[in-house]
Structure formats: structure tokens, C-alpha cells
Length: 256
Image 1 (tube, rainbow, N blue to C red):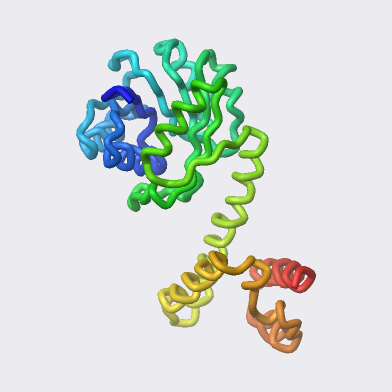
Image 2 (cartoon, rainbow, N blue to C red):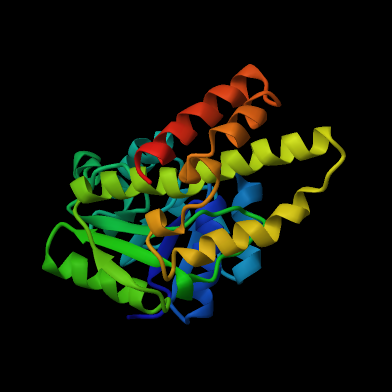
């Protein structure tokens, strides 16, 4: 791949980790764009590449990777397609169709979706990340697969329809458990106990599904059908947490 060929559009959670990973893998980044000069400067200086809040400041890239909020994608993609009509344009959104780029005016387009949770203050090791790619044609698909492969993680092909279910499954596997961690923390804090005591339990629960199916790894009173323990626990909960406790316990009991 030619040096300095990728323009990274965005400077948020995913864009930050992706920029650091691309730079570390020796993949050429010609620049970083963000809607605000401050965000563009912060990421551009972090990986030592040109940056701007004006797309017209960049020369024509060969590849543009758009990593912005879903709500901004259509507008940003339209600007990118107008300014760089020859570029291969890819978005990173899990639940948005590849066709959104065609509708924005792109003629060469695809999807570059790293399936991971990203936070700006924590850079992700992309060698552990599964990246799902899609292209408008064989050349676009091959180019995006090549970029993803250089990051060191697993690379899969997935259609836009498949990616909708992939993103939904990720909500169940990541976002919902994290909300449950917050509930756990709230319960513990109310009673003067540290959430850090849960961390070994959380780590072991996640580690088990590397070698066991999720059903085999399930434990707890609902899995055992221990109604006495469950009733005592229900008495400790407010209405909001009680409803969640009952829904999840019923699911576990029905699928044990």
C-alpha cells in the first residue's frame, strides 16, 4: 500500500484507537479530520500526522475511513464523496448499510467494522480485534481486507444484513453486561463494599466462554432452580432492579 494513503475522518473513541493501531502497524495515514480543530489537533499530534477541521485541506487520498457518530455519517460521507470522488470510502458503523455510502455519492465504497468496545482513554490492541469488511466490488473488498490484516487481528467478510445481527449480538454481549456491572456497583456502594471485589469474578466469567458454551458456563440460583435463595434476594431489591432480576432469572431458568 502506498505511504500516506489513508485519510481518517473522525477523532472519537473508535477513530483514536484505530489511528494508533494503523500508525503502529506502519499503515500510511496522510491525515486526520474532525469537525472541531481541537479534536483534530489532539489526534493528529498524537500520531504525528497532518490534521484539520476542513476536508478541503487534504490532497486526494486513496482510502478514506469514516469513523464518526452514526447520526453524522450521511452528511460527512456526502462531503467526502464530493471532495474525493476517486477515493475508496469506508465507514466503520456496525448497524448502517454499506449502501449509505452509495446514496451519499460514493462510487467506490465499503465497510471497515472493528467489533470491539472503544473508549477514548483506553487504546485497544487491534491484534485481538475481529474486523468485518464489505466492499462494493472485489477490488474494494480486497483493499479493506488488506488494511485490516495489517493490524494483526482476525478478518471476516460480512454483508450489511449479517452485520445488523452482529451489532445486535454485540449489544447483548457487551453493552448490557456493562449496564449490569453498573447495577452491581450501585448495590455494593450503597452498602459500603468495593466494586473491585467483583473484578476477578467478571474476568473468570468472561474467560470461561473461551472454552465452554455460554449455557455450560452459566451458574447461580436461577440455573440451580434455588427458589429460596432467589426469594431472599428479591426482597433486597428496589422495583427497577427487581424487574431486571426477574426477567433475567426467568430466562436462565427456561434455558438451563
